[in-house]
Every structure is written in structure tokens, then in C-alpha cells.
Length: 535
Image (tube, rainbow, N blue to C red; front, side, top):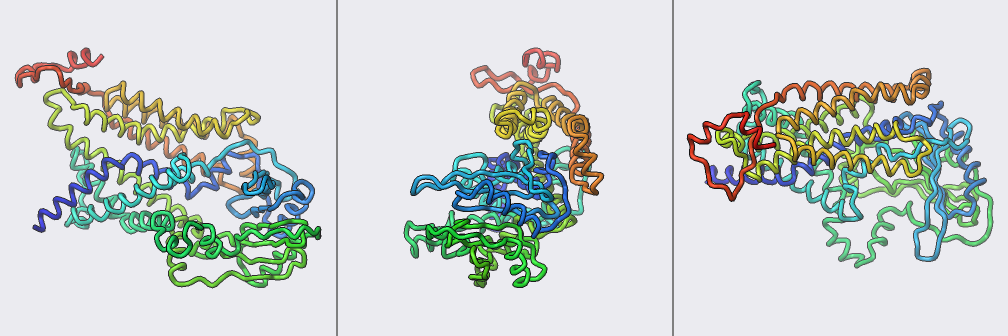
């Protein structure tokens, strides 16, 4: 019975990993990149200058700009600069017809002068962050699919632990150049090395969308009015109705001083001004998230927008909400400093590699029995094509996004959307290439192209944005250079991987209508004949 249970878990681990492996690989890769989404955005918008940090001075500049350009707005949003993101971001909501949300206008300001910075249009790291849980699909279908994949990933992890009863012993075993055995050893070693991270990141992703996938308790208390639930959960985000009486807005720098007295040493990341210029104006200050592991989007300080007096402090959270916020914060990693953020990145790459090695290992195990016949069944050929495009092709798609950012003219209309379009166009072309070329040759060619694209990014950056790179180094800012060095290291790794795929004679896809060859006839088919038939 025990052996039967382990075999069942092995079957579950194998087939869930195969069916959802390509989706999970994309989710984990883009999610791993999201730990440096701010740095990626800075690279894609090098026009934004690096300035000395002064929150109160930045708030004063933002208030002056908004009072001049957005007095008719219903709400203002101000994102203060910090050590990772030097821009002073402002956004306002233009009221529209009753019952509609209204449109938003977003601008980037120089944190020292308050003037508008004409940065190139780019989603930058925000695209990869959103893709990893929305999959560029309409709301809420992408979130549902990503959450379902996370649930199945969690099941795969548990079933893998049960299947490998000697998992910790196998962690210290690695046999290089042993074909399938080497892939299994690598898969087990990566899985055990970062097992706590795998479990944490997968389970916490389910906690984040718990209200979406387990809404029974919310529906029982609030019915279909889910907005009322979130209003009670995050009172600081509640909209205040305007009084219709004009009144001057209090000084935002003075409000920041009062906030510092309430929480000395705390970091304010965002200000929201409701009804600016109205007697019912309120100013809500939200922490940046670097001070605590617990992520609480409703932990804001609310001030009267006219008098500047404190109206309400952050609501004390219950233990369940603190636990939920803790998992949320662990998943996002906003609290992490540079060293811990790199640890997140490395373990995220390990999770991605674990999924990739599992997909390769599944195909290699089933491909062996067909090597003598020279005929590969259609279903295995399909897995092979999806492996190549889902892993090697995705790496090319990511690189294409960055190349498009540098090659498109800054004034090109809709350039932010075209960066995303080129991501998917390149990804689709790699799928076509993988379908037309034999397995190992397609792997080698796509990895070689990826190596060329990534290794060429630093040179492209110097040619197209040399002044920005030199200016950042002059100010002691190493983000742009760090991005280029990471791209170069990725290119070198892909070049090393491409060399491992030597050209061999391809296996033909089985023709179900053709009569089977006899054993001796199969043995007599040489590589030259196979290649000619494949063409």
C-alpha cells in the first residue's frame, strides 16, 4: 500500500509538472525578474536623473506641480523617490460621468527641480511583474489561471517530497555527463536546496488571492457587495465625498513632519490627496514597505487636508491579518535589502531551473526508447517543441523586449505597447522555429541567439544611451551598469549551454498511416537518409 501511494504521488508529480510546466516556467521567470522591477524600469527609462533624497522637498515640488496642472482632479497620487527609484511620480484622476471610475494622468518629475521629465514610454519592470500573475489576459482570467497554476505547483512540490523518500541523500549526489541521470540529480539538488523558498513562494501566492479563490466567508457577510468588504478592510483607501466648498490645501511637507512624529524613522512611499482644494480634502500617507515584512496596503495615516491635523492612525490588525500580510510581504520582498533581494533572485532562478529540468527530464526518459527506430511520436515531438519555445524562446522574448526599448525612437507613438508586442512576436517566432527545426539543433540555435542578444545588450546600451550610463556612474549609481553586467552574465551562460547541444541526426515524427518498419529495416536507416526525409 505504501509503495502504491508513492507511485500515485510520482504519477501526480510527473503529469502536473508536464501539463503546467511551461506556464509555471514563465510565471517563475518573470516573477523572479520582478524582484528587480524597479531597477529594470530605471534601465528602460534612463532619462530620469538620480537626485539626493529629500521627502519633504519632493512633496513640496509635487504639490506645486499638481496645484498648477491638476486642480480639477478628484484625487492626487504622489510616489516619493527612494534609494531604488529616483523619480518623483505624480498621478491624478480626472472625474468623469457619475458611476464611472474616471481617467488617470501620470507624469514623472525631477525630484530636485519639480520639472516634468520627458522619459520614454515603457512599462519596464512593471510589465514582467504584471505578467507573472495576470499573464497579459483580461481581468480576472489571468489571475485565475495563475492561481490555479500556483495551487498545482504546491501539489507538485508536496508529491515530489513524498516521491523522493531519499531526497536529502540525493541532494549530495550529482553524476555529470550521465545523460538522464545527471538531469535527475540536478533536479533533485535544486529542489532540495531551495525547498523552503519553493514552498513559501507558492503558498504565499495562494494567500494573496485568497479572497478571490475562497470568497465564501466574504459572500456570507457582505453578499455581492465585495467593495464594502474591502472598504472595511482598508479604511484608509475609502473615497471621501467632496463638500463642494473651496478650501486651500494644507502644506504636504508639514503633514510629512507630523507623520514622522507619529512613526519616527518610518519611510513614507506614497501620498494620496482626496478632493484637493475642497473643504472635505484628506491626505493619506502610506508606508513604503521597507520597514516591515508585513505588507498592509491599508496601513495609512489620514490627515485633514485643510487643517493638516491627524484624523486617524493606522488600524491595529488582528492576528490572522498580520499572518496574511506576513505571507504577502514575504512573497513581494519589498522589505529586503540588496543582499537579501539577490538571495530572492537566486532562489527564484533555482525554482525556474527546477521546473525546466523536470520538463527536459520527462522528455529524455521517453525519448530513449525511440532513438533506435529513428521515429519520434507526435506527442513527444510536441513536448519537445514546447520545451524549446517555452524556455529558450522565452529568454529570447525577454531580450527582445529590452532591445526594442533601446532601438525604437524615444518619440515613437505607442512605443510602450510595441515593446510588449515585440515580446510576444519574438516568442511566437521561436515556437515556429522550434517546430521547423530538429530538437537539438533548435535548442542550440535559440540558445546561441539568446546569448548574442543578452551579451550584446551592454554594447547596445553604450551606443544608444552612453550619456545616461556615464551620468549614473558619475553620481555613484550602479543600477544601469549592474543591469548590463547581469545581461552579459546571462549571455555567457546561454553561450555555454548552446555549446552543449551538438548537432545530431533528427528523429522523424511518426506517421500513423504508414506501415511499421521491421526491426532490421529500422537499423539500416542511416543518418543521411533520415535527414533527407526530414527535409
